[in-house]
Length: 90
Image 1 (cartoon, rainbow, N blue to C red):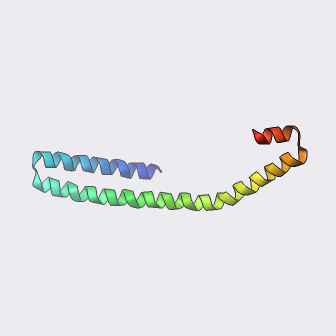
Image 2 (tube, rainbow, N blue to C red; image 1 turned 90 degrees about the horizontal axis):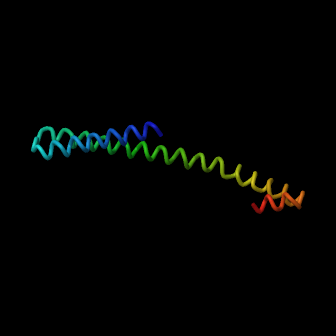
Image 3 (cartoon, rainbow, N blue to C red; image 1 turned 180 degrees about the vertical axis):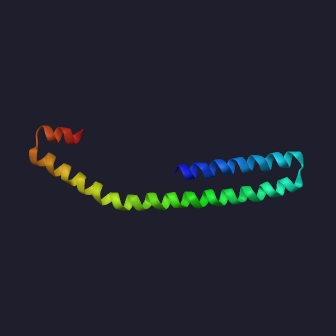
């Protein structure tokens, strides 16, 4: 995640440099920074997709575990009744 934040930051810096060059009217610097900003945006987008893929993969792994543990807790509360039912409701 830190890598993603760093890429976003670098992209923002490149965008600001491009804007400053545009305001100055420096065509050479403007073209250079525009290309750098495009590359930074592309890298940040690719990194964001990788992070999303990793999170989706983890969700697929943990969903069955969470479901199984929820069923176990429900069975425990129903078996022991009384206080456990009240705790289960909470």
